[in-house]
Picture: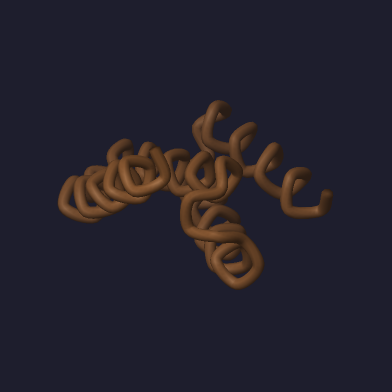
Amino acid sequence: FVLGLRLNLATTRKLSGDLSGARILLEGIVADMERVLPEDHEHLLSARQTLAQVLHSQGELAGALALQESLLQAWLRAH
């Protein structure tokens, strides 16, 4: 429940233009989710996708691309 609340806050920060704040939250959320959820869990994939969007918006295209490629591979393994 708390991870979901944190993800909602990070998403709101991203949408309001606070990319740095969103990124800090998302990096922590993803790390926490990776400890407790399987790699193909929909909430973890969603958090990673949101982080990739923030990285892209910040101009960190290599990091965004790497994260998006890992997301696709995780999804393909699960389906």
